[in-house]
Image (cartoon, rainbow, N blue to C red; front, side, top):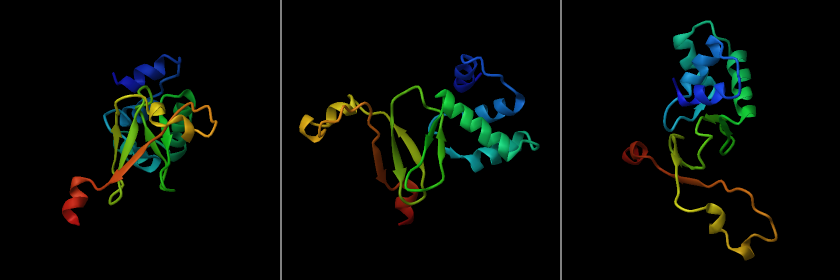
Length: 139
């Protein structure tokens, strides 16, 4: 059973066959699919699944706090099942590939007090950008 399905069951969330296929599609390391990519992969296993079911299910999982909805640079929203662990992202400027990055130390400590401008900082989101190995070779 996937980690995401286990977490969703803790919420007493009804696990329909459609919801299971969507949750299993999101299972794995460094998963950051768009809703359309999730629909495409889910349709491979359940051809009758609808776009509305995928979008509604993703919205419910986000509301439960079990997946993250990401939007970088106005690109399509991506969905990250790694909601349990604080992390940041590394994005390829060439192809848009995205990887999770686990940093050492609390990023809130990286911001000096005089740079906080009186804010009570509660969280930090850091995005690292560059070119993945494939895009480096193509350049």
